[in-house]
Length: 272
Ligand SMILES: [Zn+2]
Image (cartoon, rainbow, N blue to C red; front, side, top):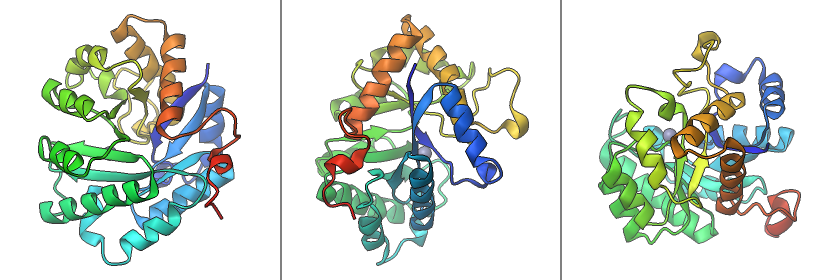
């Protein structure tokens, strides 16, 4: 089985002591591909270093939580970092009207700037949206964003419909394993077209609630992706192996990682 974790925050300090072990454990669990999430310019640099060292991939972007810290150098810096052959998407970018760590106008401004950067570079967007529907979809529509993934989808049916109408991929995390707040996802995941579904841990966050035993300090990690896969496969009433292969294929399509080349480097002549 070859699983693809489309989003893990491996630059997080929770992994600084045992990053190598974490990745070895993930590989032993069949998680052969991981995209390391970039959430600020600095974290993007760190994500790229991890991606280089372990032959993984990374995103280049600023999370809406950090929109207030963006400035005139942000987009040029991301543009430069995005040229790295291991960078497969722009993000994590979007809107978070749940925590509101940054003012809404800042969030919108830097979301739009990153959406435009993605279009300019021909890279898909790695999107974060929390309690920001329908504003979030309006922005994507206005900017004619074509290739993108709504990472960690936790919303309701109307939000899912809007994303699917926009042609987005939908990322499912261990949220679906939460018998209280993730219950609706068990039904909604059946409405995601087979070629649009991708899986992710969002480690070290969102540890599946029904994982036994619960890991130390409740740290989530890519090695737990099979647990999420099984929950999704159960919800779909389909064999886990089939869903694993399909979602891995979708992730490769989303990030333009084609089987022929050993990495994205093979198809990105711009890469230095
Ligand atoms: Zn997120």
